[in-house]
Image (cartoon, rainbow, N blue to C red; front, side, top):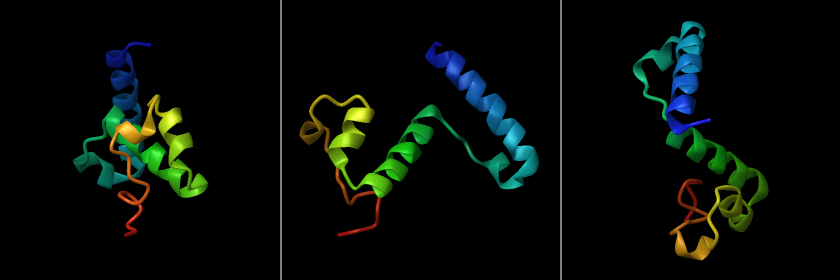
Length: 75
């Protein structure tokens, strides 16, 4: 599937979901936001930044500026 194809399918599903959840109508949902949300959920579940970075396709997690606390609200 191409990037444009994925964006098309995602947009179609977001529009369908907005029928049941009107607050989605005013939001822009992109593939990047979906990817980031999945990564944050995985990080919260596993607490292993290396696994999440590898799942995202980062070969060297320490070079990507990934922070295990940035999206979790921890210091």
